[in-house]
Each structure stands twice: as C-alpha cells, then as structure tokens.
Image (tube, rainbow, N blue to C red; front, side):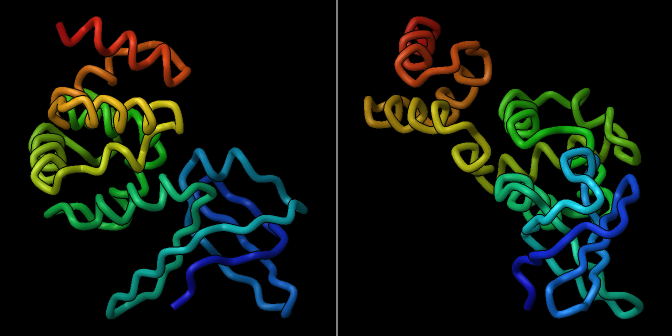
Length: 184
C-alpha cells in the first residue's frame, strides 16, 4: 500500500497532479482544490496518499496535510459518500470548517459542496457525529490544547466542541479563557 509519494510536480490540473518520483515513475494523484492551489509545477513535494481500489479503477488521492487526509478517509465511511464526493467536500471546506459544521449541525455548509443536497448533508452530519468525529485531529495546535485543557476541567466533549467553534482567539490561553466565559 502506498502511504506517501515524494517527487516533483510535472503537470497540474484543478483536481489532479502528476508527480514524478526519483525512480522515474510518474503517478497521477487526485487532489483537493486546496492542495492543488498550494503546489506548483516543478516543485518537489511529498503528498500523503490514500489508495482506492475498485473493480474498474485504481485511484490515488494526495494530500498535503494529515488533517485533510483523515477528513477524506472519514467521509468515505459515510453511507452514500464516495471518493468524488469526499474530494468535493475537501475542496470546498477545510477540516476545521467541517468539524464546526458537524458539531453545530450546520447543513448549509455541506449544501455548498457540489453534489451534496439536503439529504446528503444530514447524512454526513449524523454519521460523523455518530462516529464521534475526532474534532481534536482537525484543529490547530492551540485549539487542540484548549480542547484538552477544557476536557481535563471536566467539561463534556460536545459542549467543548460547540463552544470552541464559536471562539475567535488564536492562542491556547486566550481560547480557554474565551471558552470558559461562554460556558457559564
């Protein structure tokens, strides 16, 4: 199983990149729009990879960040969401936006994704909530630390997630302080 591909971008399209490895082999990786805009032709990159095997095709999906890869793989577990829809979500919403939308039950965020209607949005929210969507994995370091600090104070994960989604601070101490003031 391929877990990452390291090489030089030789060709780039909106949702795919061709990466030539030192061995001379070139791989076509499907990527999100966020990843595509972050890389340039001629640039050396290491993309995390998720392989999808089907009867009629084998595809490799590339990600610059572990958070985006985890989100993609989590979306694949949602009933009715295939690789194309999962990639569309990753191209429209950043991992922290998905986390916020799931925790707040915000269907409108998912309805902005091409190919996701009201029913699909409800399904994504319900199944990611049921799977205890790992909000900590999709947050910044400051948000992760604040989440863990609030959890150690005895607050419930649901309440912490909803409160941190509404906070605007960017440093751990300020996030904890702002969240505590909102939890009263």
